[in-house]
Amino acid sequence: MSRPSRKIVVLGSTGSIGGSTLEVAAASDGNLQIVGLSANRSCQRLLEQAQRLRPRWVAVTDEESGRQFDWSALPRETRLLLGTEGMERMVAHAEVDVVVASVVGSAGLAGAWAAVQAGKTLALANKETLVMAGPLVMRVAAERGATILPVDSEHSAVFQTLQAGRREELKRIILTASGGPFREHTQEQLETVTVEDALAHPTWEMGRKITIDSATMMNKALEIIEARWLFELQPDQIDVVIHPQSVVHSLVEFRDGAVIAQLGPPDMKLPIQYALSYPERWESPAAKLDFRHAFSLDFCPPDTTRFPALLLGHEVARQGGTAGAVLNAANESAVAAFLQGQIRFTDIVPACRAVLDVHNYEPNPTLPQLLELDAWARKEMTKWIGA
Image 1: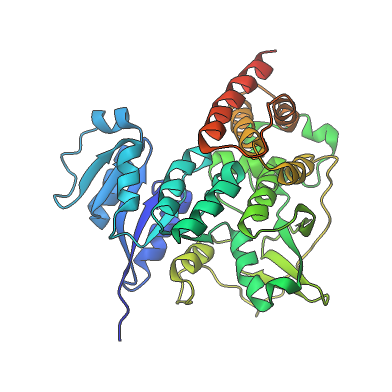
Image 2: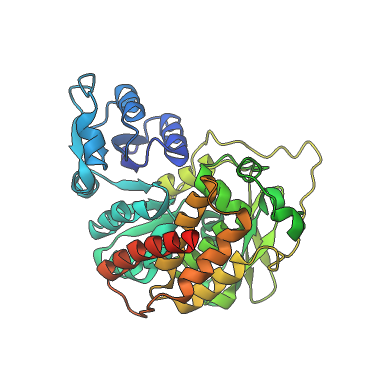
């Protein structure tokens, strides 16, 4: 007996994760049906996707960009929605089963929030949602009956390996990090890193912002915070290990000393499909490991002197409250400044620390307070850059 298709909305469909999600859906033998797509300003790419997939909706969150674009070639059966409200209506529609949240940065919070408010299954690739508002999002998900399934390769690996034991038997999780392109650089070499150097990731193909985060290891700091809320962990239950091959995506250690790992090539299609097929496993278009050929796996502890972002991640995970939203906004602004040549690579983390240290901390913020602090942190970073 054939199963009914799962109807999928992809937020950020024109980005890297969004594109991989569409590949997974195309290879699913009809098990996944794309009914909605969204982008911020990439209207031409969104139109091309709509012409190929003929979804029920496309949404452009930047309303001005959407109004200025010529949509005359949009398929007749596809409805155009403009602005954040239009995107939220699409997400909340009764026809939608799963929402893939793959918008980069704090901009992804609105769609993820709408999905959990509507009680949907949320395939979460936007780590900033839980970095900014982890306790709020998890509480609303519980109240509305929403399910959050991780798409980040590290958190998907933890989610999968946790199934090897009971929760009360868990000792800790270990997030793996490639170490980025500079894992063997000295502090002096890091001082002279260029934008081109930082964008040359050795194993993963990602967007510019995430690639810079990998180079500073701020991505791992954000993943520590995300894991703290997603898996209801204490910060001291989360460790990081450098694993240059990016084959082991994370590990879980149980109290008897058993360590369970999830392995696979560095291909996002596997964790994407697992979130969309869960609790089943289907044939996948993702790359496969080939054990007919020899290969080695290396692990080493991170150097927090050269990569202090990891210390910042653990600190913010302990603080909770408004700290995550401020760190995330400060980092997004600092990365943008580095990409524009306004600050050095080694300025990114100290700038984030400076903004975090001067914000008005609130332990139990509301969503409006978090959004206000997001805007404040960006302005504060502008002052820091100009100082």
